[in-house]
Image (cartoon, rainbow over all chains, first blue to last red; front, side, top):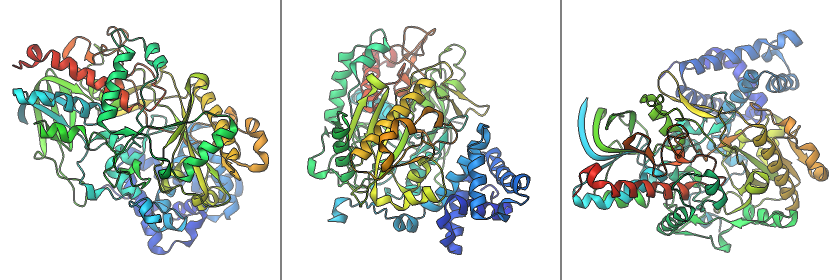
Length: 134
Length: 503
């Protein structure tokens, strides 16, 4: 197993996660652990270069708002965090758009792949199919 | 390195490899030895749990997250006993005549494709689903299309005893889908074909392959490999490469065949797709019932196909554009969501191709052409009209900014959905119909194989999968793959005496 990606950037990662999926605020400690476990599990299959890039990009997002707002990402309120992510996610540079897209996909994986979350949003698919509904 | 020897080695067990295996299986009676090597695992029935991430991890390459080189499109393809036939929805269409004619492959006759496709349609129990098994998601599509002026057709499906789990893309938990893992491979094994799973072919050499068999790790789904872990060199009189439109060209490229076959890896196409959702005012049946029962074919006129679909929470979240409160609101409305899969019919162009990196791993270089983007936008507009005609209160359209269109704006769909909002790297695009890379044609100057899948200049080496397509098929490809693979097997049977030394 490669070294985990998130521990050194856990605070900004969680701030990004809350911006991507605001409902993540309701996650218990165990829910957060599961979110991060799913993200690490996905990243573990990626080349070392990709894992380094993910960590680096989280750091970029943490420090970038200093230029515009004089505060790091974690120091911003929810509205400004959303604006920062949307601006970078819509940037003219493909690399930046890709970075935001990739991070938000990782967060959505960690959140929506949790079975209790699927149930909370009303997703009820069951291997028994029609039999389970009638 | 352990040495073994077979008459025929087939690389891959999906629609192509599985078909070749079953079509060659009768030769086993005459002493011909046939081996199928599959990179993925063989799952037992009880292991198909329908849980999104568990199944994606075991059944898809890269957990379903394989990206093109510039990271702007996700390519989904299976890796398991049965290949992608384990994870497709069972849609079984015969190739359009105009497409096969436009391919202009010498020796490939449309009527031959039709004849062979029908054989496999029958073998796989292809039929139309009964009306009482259709869910609201599909009914609303038909209703919306009728009101918006689009002609729908029902998908023929290869099912036997479908319970409507809606989990087709995670591997049917009820063994209903008649993929090669249910039909062709078990039949081939009963007749003496050997199938080895967890066996990754590293390279093809002169009449041999080098294979790495990997161990099953703790907690991993699927059976352990039939062979002990290790590296094998397997000699063969004939080798059939059927690793799919990414796997096959990548294998041949890392085997050093790129110099003698300059078109190897070229001509990659994939039907780039959006998953669109329309929110209805009340819950509908969407996550129960077969997900893909109808389609609209506008390929010839407008370059797109629309299909019904229903995906799982993470896949849906990933494919909606954006994030934050608006995205979350749509996800919370999951029971009210109708879904349409938009497929653009892209064309083979020089810059879209499969290559390999220094380690020999596949790299797909793909850029959206103007024509593809325009087709996706036309398809998105059509889908938005269909959603609203079916009663949706809002529609998610990736090529709109913001990507959610409210019902009050339904008359402005053509204006709001526009190519200028299709921003690669921001909008989610995925593809599952991967084609080309070892295209059929006349000679090594314009292609990799002839119309029987024979690699130019190497009569012992054949290709039998969607990589043979010289251009987009413009419709779901599985029956056509089986038809072409059946031709490859016929070619081998015809040459069995000279090539295999069969009696």
